[in-house]
Length: 267
Image (tube, rainbow, N blue to C red; front, side):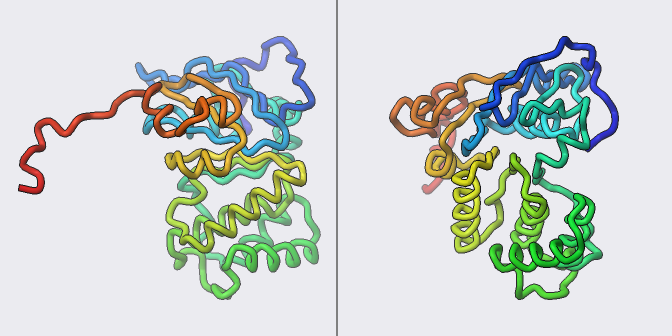
């Protein structure tokens, strides 16, 4: 989590409902002439399995990295269980488990050594760190990797060890960017079970994905984001209007092309 502060720490105090796990308030990020995130505000309920979807370049990843303290916003802030992510970064870090897409890991460590290292950074004692590491490696089908260095892992294995690192300190809110990408079907099923059980015990999962079927199957709530703004948010049934989430998504975002001009394909 970055130690730099956004430009909006002077905003007046905000009262956050105790039922809100992550409150995003007025986040803005501008790169030159590009407005990546435009005054985005969103409430994510405690205990929800919350999907965030949008086309490429919609601002999903930028929003989540700002909301979790990994990228300094130009304006706005976020609160995890009422704790300002930017004003109280250490406390917020203890409440959050984050798996950014493309996260760089300590690839010269083995999986077990990496997880023990992360656990102890979060303040766990060595014995607890080793026990949780063993359990997570088994649950995520990584035990057989043994002492193999993370730099030698496949893309799917790297994704799973990054998820284990996000889980190991038992956070109250888990933020996962494309968690099923490059993961084999058996491991994906195991991950779904882990995450669903986690929400049933009161944890909150925030999931960014391009796969509408996965989001509709797993998530209790969803927000559709485009051009750095929330187009619609609510329960998955509300957003999908009782139908197919993918069809609802394309009706809001647009961009579906006909095959005109490609008549030569298949001839």
